[in-house]
Amino acid sequence: MQTLKEFRERTGLSQCNMARRLDMSQSFYEKVERGHSEPSRGFMQKLKAAFPDVSIDEIFFSETKAGAAS
Image (cartoon, rainbow, N blue to C red; front, side, top):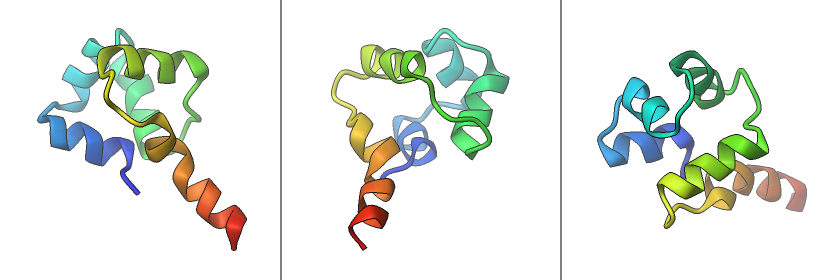
C-alpha cells in the first residue's frame, strides 16, 4: 500500500510544500499524514485536484479493504 507519506516523499515535497500545494495548514497536513486526523473529503479532493493521477483509494482505503477481507 502506498501511504500519504510515501506519496509525498516520492514527489520530492516537504510537508510544508505539500501543505502549500494543497492550500492547507502544515499542521493539519502533518496530522493527516501521521494518522492523528482522518482525511476529510475536502482533503482528498484537494489532493486529487493537485495530483490528478494519484489513487485516493490506494493511499487512504486499501489497508481498510485488505483488513475487511480477512
